[in-house]
Length: 454
Image (tube, rainbow, N blue to C red):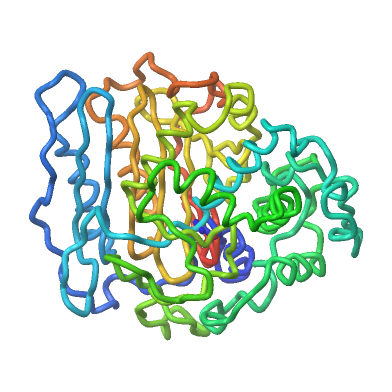
């Protein structure tokens, strides 16, 4: 779901949980036997002569680095700027079996990017005075969180959305060390929440610290259902997906297949050692394990449209938008250095000054998505169909986002934030090459989801 963010080996289970935000075990590019990716530019036309628009050469170079130097199957990006217009680019291969080139129009699993949709729906209900962000979870779901020392009377709705609830991630359960074995299984939110409550506390008390857990968003989804009488998926479709005409965005339910044009995704097969892992097509996957924390299918165009509408103030009143952007420092092991987390929204510093606001997600099958808005309202969405296997490749992924949002802007330019409330990123924050974990589940790490995934 972006579903999970993950650490490695010993911490692989935790990483999977983070994944509804990224991904863990991967096969070295040299051993993958993948065909050499196409290097010829496939850049869409867009005005480039205007000041501040750039030629997109640097952006194309960052994509080629991912597919040619890091050996990923495919990478694509779509960018929209209020002045410069829209452009997209892609390198590598969307389907290794047929050799079909990667493109920016294909659908993919969005992983933990789903969390921003869910948070937006909850905040809309808060704007309607149907949900109180500072009310305890037990007001809406009495008895749901009441075991093993976890107490829904002490956890607020706000803390769910901000990952400061103190709840563990169900993706940290030992069964998720090999997510491929659960690939076609159906899960319910209550089943997954119950599993989370059997796990040790993450070491943070409610409100005392950040711990990325997709569990929080499954609970938030049940609150939406309790308040509206409809599933959270239905409410998000009614309130966000349909009004914004996000035609590529949908809930897959129990169907493991992707509908419509889509890229195939690739991951390292479950194995006892990295040496035994082989590259596997992970496109088909039952995403009920991610739910409203990581199950959405979308496309780069839809994601940049959604984040554009959100950060432009078209989905929430200004007061709620300001609360959404009120951040806490994020755990660098779950996200990356310099990242901060609001209510379903990440802020991250840019080398050209200011921050981007958005979310990312990775799923166990190999898709990674990111949607963000930078200074001046420029929007970007990135799609990968294989999760980076090394820290260097993760840094190269971040470089795509930075190139897209900084192209045409001088280093450390004065502009500091996209339209909306003032950024809460600390003034001293500097862009340090954030570590984007490989997700095993659902995370935000540039995110990770069961492989962050959700």
